[in-house]
Image (tube, rainbow, N blue to C red; front, side, top):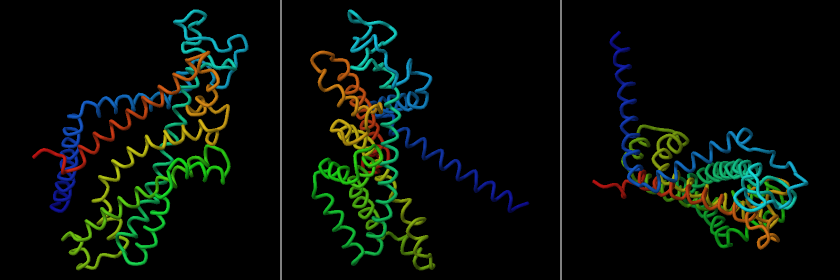
Length: 304
């Protein structure tokens, strides 16, 4: 009976400690109004992506032969059936934008997940084992960083073949060094701490020391990097799509929509403007949210 009471008290203490940490995090995060606004916009984009099938007035690939390059509803010749107009083959721009949010968020999630997992693994090995392992891993990362990121992504996609999957693989490879270097630096800083020395003394295994003892204390900068890399992945994917090396038509990806609309910039401003605004708004919201995460998670930026 006494042991159960002690266990319950221990659970209650942990829950109260987690609640206190969340409260402190939100306190610092909410001080940055730009970050809160960015989070609201990002949540709206996520909701739009989840319910795209219900929010979009038409299918993103449905063509209306009687409505080629129809302007938005507030201009002469526009109609409410196509609120943001249509493109050169009669597809509803609003529907393609709504469904395009799915592709952008999917690209960001996959690229960040792959880059984060592989980068953390390599960075942990480099910072923990040092020596030749560290030298080999970091020299490879230095070679990747020596190339302009977009140019290297273009080369990789050209080798693998133009497609959305290959574009995501290329972007993940390009973003890899940032996670490796950040993880390595954080691990090297933690390895000199007293708690790591104590864990070694009591005989904690290597894998447990790496993934249970050290890694959780290195996650704050990695979370911030992941948030900022999310926006970079969306931009890079849009750039590859614009160059014809990413998602292929008729996929309603925002960069591909820009590429299809290049020749109509002067005749039909809406087919270029709205995909560009969607990219700008989403990337700006994620960057603002990343700044707020940095302020909330970095103890050096917190006021005493």
